Amino acid sequence: MCDCQKSQVVFDTTALDKIITDPGWVLDNEQAFWAEYRAQVLTCKWAEQVGYTIPYEKWRERMREWADLSPAERAEHPLMKAVRRILEGKKVFIEQALPHECSFLPAGVDLSVTVQFTAFIPPNAFAVEDIVVDIASKYWKGNPEHILNLLVHEIFHVGYSFYRTLHAEKERVGTDLNKLLNNIVCEGICTYVAYRALPIFNVEDDRDYQMLDDFEEVKRAFATTNMILSQIGQVPSEELQILAWTKGVMDRAFYVTGAHLCRVIDTHLGRAALIEIYAQGPLAITTLYNAIAEPDLKFALPEV
Image (cartoon, rainbow, N blue to C red; front, side):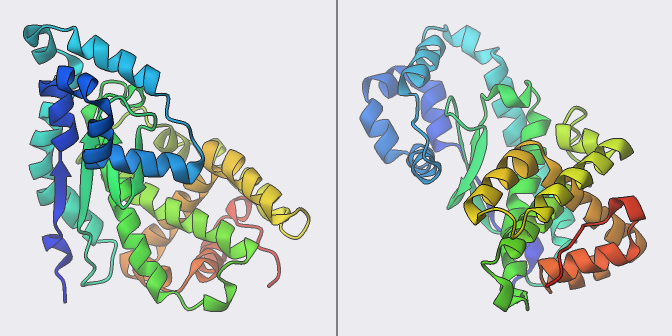
């Protein structure tokens, strides 16, 4: 059996190192850089999967801006400060954040994953085979702690994938209800685990955490989530998924309701109960939560 705390979390800075130290080569050998460096290859795979066209000219502009800086200017640039903090933070991640993540999982789960760091790509972060992070993204607001906290969230997706192998609700997989609830409980526990990691990597202005700490925002998130759930069987599946993406994901309703669900179970029933119910499946998780939740903060589950 694997020891979760011995999982191999690899920080790969190969592409980032090339950008930082030899931007001229990257610009002169653009095709080779995007074809041979794994962070860039995975960015292309991500773009293909989501139907996104990479704005290469914008990428070139940012690369040229970086290349035009003197070595002394680069050394003092916020990008370099972020790189140094991330590399320093790896030790803390392994010693503190990894055990924290393992505490939300059954014994023996392997969280081994590679995190690819690069710069100037379109998304701030994504997971396709590896986790890929744009360390230069404006999304981080110049705070490297934000990146490290996000890694807690992203790496726990590996843990949730293990939970899915245990789920007993196999006959429900593929239904509209299962898809929505799976999204809620998946993003919910990943958000909650990262939220509980704030003492390790503090992020004061994260939108999800601010909403989670505001009772009125939590109520609004439940109202939005229940509106989406009410459309099951009323609209085509494709329309339902668009609604789930725009309101549940982009407006963060699924993240907030799912994280609140975990907080309530973890607080009132204990960590062991949270782990046990997460091994059963999305419907079992939300049903247990509803049994102990406040009336205004319940999921409006359709009859199944």
